[in-house]
Image (cartoon, rainbow, N blue to C red; front, side, top):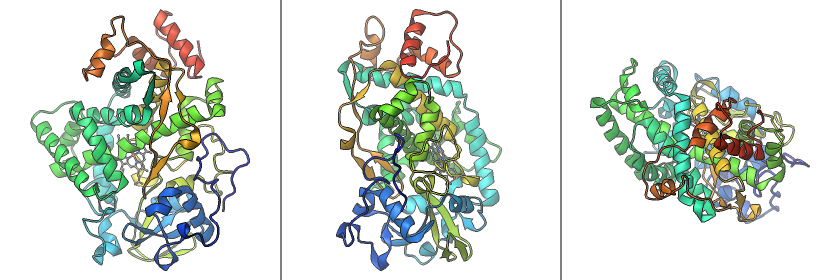
Length: 490
Ligand code: HEM
């Protein structure tokens, strides 16, 4: 088993992670499932998923047998090199769920909670070769049409509106009131949906990703909403992903467009929420991490990369179905077997990390976005939303602090991801923006307000170009950014 680092980095996983104690022999809570195979779901796995990955690595090496919901057998790939071998060999590891032996044998069907993630669908995640390339090129080229600066300004506007709703309270629950709202508000604009759809879609995509019994009905709701959007955009196109996918020369059918919008929404929302809140957690709970930012030894983008190594928003993702018998990591994989990529485990593989939590200094070779032809196409958008969300929050509320002991923070886990349940904070009460307070009043009433002057300034700071003239607003902002180590050049 991997030894805990004697001086773990601030982003080392909290209690229940790699540093968790090895269970005593015979402890019933750690008993494996049928056939002595560990379940990747249920109370034992959710209580300590990272501890489970390390037990699996110790028992089986880089590839371990596991059980999914319904005790369906699967392989969990824990090794960094072995994940690269799977993702870079799409001919041997197909993404098409119709190649899954359990599906062909009728043991997994559409009603299974794992169906939305693993069974075949028309989006590019479930395709191989030329079909995948056609769909992926439409998606990549349409996502590339977004003006990144425009997207940042849009995120800043929503971030300020959300902060306005709680700034005068002096306290907030950052996960529910901020991190869970902002990515979907950004994504509704990316997709072409009205902003009011955001909160309902947040709930539905969370249920889908967590894989509860509500996953199937949540998926139906998302597809219906997106189907209506595609119908609207077919006759009234705009500057959004729905319209650009419909117009793309790859000639996607309406159904294909709906499934790709669903894919972007589900893949981009919860992941970005997790990244925002996980980064804020380490900034707020670890004085050494905060000190590194403050002292300019670490930039905010480097902090985000460190969190992507240590606490990737997706812990496990589908890796493919073996198209032939193959040896991998010392295991004999049979044709039709499903492989899952243990991204969180591979990021702490002793073969690539000197110790769990070791500082990575902005290195981007983690597997949080996987690799190969299916590597996440939205990673820069996710990074932009995350960086902007944290920057605006820390600029508006520079004395933000946790109101609970770090060890009292609780987590929930599914087969695929682990997330914080809440991040309660306090800060000095802030007057609403503007002399009359109209900004906050309007925001509380749910109205749309124009971005404050510091939003434009913060956008300029990220590009390292100060706005012309040392205005009062700019000087105040610069002082706050310095306090957080986010601004280092005059
Ligand atoms: C910042 C947090 C994010 C993380 C950690 C993340 C991670 C991932 C991972 C692990 C995959 C699976 C890749 C595979 O199957 O091998 C993926 C796929 C994908 N992601 Fe992201 N993602 C993030 C944000 C986003 C955003 C913001 C978007 C859209 C704007 C997005 C769009 C997609 C799409 C479309 C796929 C499917 C690609 C394919 O199968 O070809 N992601 N992402």
